Amino acid sequence: MMNFYLRLAYIPIVLLTAVLVLFRAQPYDDHELRQLLTPDDCAAPCFMGIRPGVTTSKEALAILQQHEWVASIHVIDVENPYQILWSWSENAPVVLRNPSLTFNGEVVTSNEKIVSAVIFSPQWVLGDVILTWGIPPDSQTTVGVIPLASPWRYTPVELAYQAQGFRANGILFCPFRSRLWTAPTRLEITNQFHGIATGAVYAINQGTFFSNLRETSTRMCGA
Image (cartoon, rainbow, N blue to C red):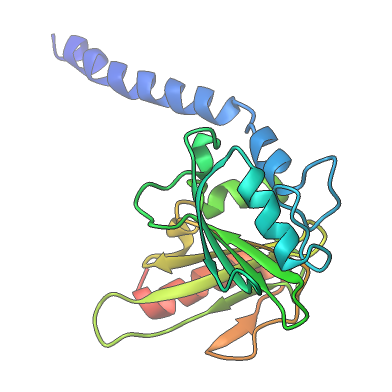
């Protein structure tokens, strides 16, 4: 009788293991992410037809005004739109929409009235970006640690994909290694990759990214 109950106890474990194996065996579908961030018909960097370093601020405003994904626009100085904010419409892909935000995206321009960045926070997490493009080359991956007086310690992470024309930013709370995959991401489509000059931030080599992140997490979080 005891053996019978032991066999019954193993059934949920076996079923759970089978589900996990099947889940991990499924190929990761990155088609939508690639099409939105690196579209085939627009050279990087590009988002919704807006190309940082090429598109003027007035051209960007016109594109947003005519785009079916955009519901509303707020412009700082219509004659010289150096900052453009927008909200997604119901026609925008679900992964782009974030109902918790008043404005979903921002276009930032340079002094020459050329777009320097398109910034937005989708529903994707850092793990989606890493599964699609991996960890970017060394000197383009930075992790900075900001110790706090409270137990809530965190590290800002920036993954700079220069070839694809964007940066993915996120905030990791303890423990850093596990939170890397689920942290909300802020995407910045840009042609400007000059590194970070402020804050306690340092470059991490592509090959040692995960080991360095684990060591940082152990030092700062104890795990």
